Amino acid sequence: MTVKTEKQLSKGQLAYETERARKAGKSLDEWLKQKAKAEALEAKKSAPKPEKKPGFFSRLIDKAHKPL
Image (cartoon, rainbow, N blue to C red; front, side, top):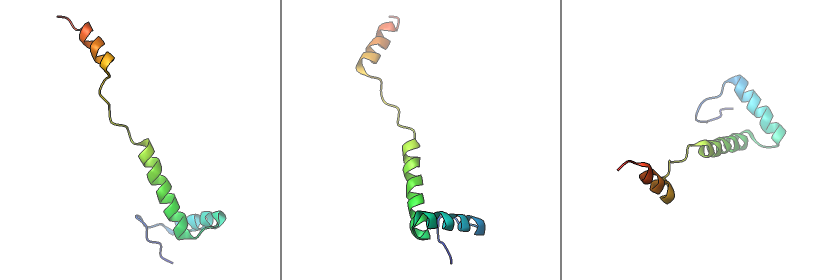
């Protein structure tokens, strides 16, 4: 049984994932696809948001505090 993923699983990892898939009532392929999808979603959520431009009032206050 060969599992084709982004990285090859060792025998121990494969046994562990097979057991988790069996407990979840899924096939190994379905389990690994679900796991990869969940990891991708988590990575997307934890990605830093782009820094946004200061608002109107923040810029106005900054200008007011600058010396002439």
